[in-house]
Image (tube, rainbow, N blue to C red):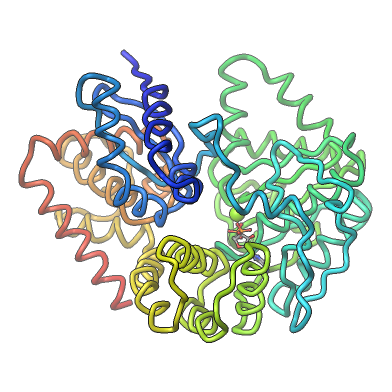
Length: 473
Ligand code: ADP
Ligand code: MG
């Protein structure tokens, strides 16, 4: 039996929207998208943990009340961080402010480390590519020592696809601009020549599509699609570990495209030599290409990025508060942006001028969360295994006896709760399991939490130990 309460969520959001200020809707509810349903609840996705928490805190009860009104029986709402680019529920969604911004040319920063000299297509109207985020253009990318080599290579590729640096591999940690650069190349080429066939896809989606095509006997169309592109941009290729079939397919795609001088750019969260369980022939293809890396930004670059963001969002935040953010958030650009979004939301909703004191108190939780974000799946496996008197190996092997299945499900559930890893990544860490197994495990624990009163304290205790272990290391 399957359920689909998507229309109820859509209606509930519409009803609530009519009671809210436009700005509030744009800021929060427009970021909520329907994901799936179970018998008695709707699962909705938001782009980040920040949105999830804020939306849950502000609107969950109101939405559930509307759902009750519409459905006639209680319907729960579970808000998750969803990597799926779900289409926003409401059709007449007002464009998010950052999308409006992208439609007009953004000024180049006038001082500091940033010089981006590319012709901006937006002056003659920006042509949207369906897979590319219009915000991800070179003009919005701040270049510094940490990323200059990669950014300049990307610009050179964009100006001369298939000729310069082919294939190119960009590697670097999370939130350092890999996706931004990949998509900037795509956007640039698309503005120059909308006829060029550009595909941007994450490795995870490439794999899913591949598997689905095999299942549905559509391999020929898969091959035709990927082997006929002019530009292939594959994001996060570290997902390919262990996927033998996908590796083989990618290898042949690679050969075909190189042969025809078609441009390929890949991104990876680590150097290719550190990607394990990838076939030698594919690794050597990547190694023969051109490789550039992205490093975390220095204080000056962080500040330049924030100033540029403020400009493009049309907001003004005093310099001392911006410096405060740069001092507090040192990890990566994504965290930096999330911090700025929080300040912006505060200043818009409360209509108060931001001060360093307010900044500090608003970011207290984010800073703690960022520290938590780096919790590894291995650490979770280790602590949960210890608790149940098992070894990490027990958690990862394929045996399915009850004594192992239950701790495994708990560990997967915790991983979903306290980290940002996708179900595919979690499945990998648990001995190469499928993402649907991870989802099923989490559902089992969610169900069990309703009937087993001892489970919640156990999970809380485990999360506490994991966090404690993390802060020690
Ligand atoms: P990754 O793919 O490496 O995890 P993203 O490309 O998604 O990182 O970058 C995270 C966020 O930070 C995006 O919103 C991106 O626009 C922004 N960003 C990253 N690097 C820069 C930069 N140098 N200048 C401006 N914005 C940046
Ligand atoms: Mg990315």
